[in-house]
Image (cartoon, rainbow, N blue to C red):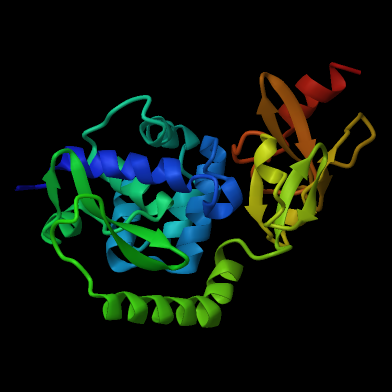
Length: 279
């Protein structure tokens, strides 16, 4: 018998992702985009992270001292998430522990981080593992080799009853914080539509589903021309973004829902170059 290594930890994490990706966050982890991962990070941040998870987030997003974590998430380059996605899909390996721990947080893998995982006395025998899997809001010990700590029947019943009670009393509230029913929104062409977070068809299309935000919900893509009012009292009232070299315009500040980039205020230079010259 020997303690599990960091390599074992990564393998178990990838296995956990394969089992849970279709269930966690309404299947958004099934085939995630970098923009979707950032959205999930914001949701987890607002849910209130544990102390250790918070430390991992701040390291990954390079949050400065005194800076709000959500702000550093909002302003990060979404390409930072691509190595995490590749690792979860077992397309690439990584020794970057911060990336691995970020993947563990997104998947809800327990116990984490690796420093805690290794303290639990988990062992490897005949290439089978004893590990913890999150089910229905509480932890269950899965013993593949019938070794290590074994729970008695009474303990299992007690844990099961406690877990059901916790799920019944608190699970609904937790679900409402992270992915509340009918409190999500998805971008549909020129505006957001409010949707049911539990919609089973969401995982079938490559749409970016986000927790409902009243202010962001008002974002609209607009058409502009030489008669459009771009400024009021010297301040811009039109914002723009680019996707595949094409400039698109919006009615308010925020992020481009088509690629996650931050929108910019319109300038006279942009008006002259992309609006007036194209007329």
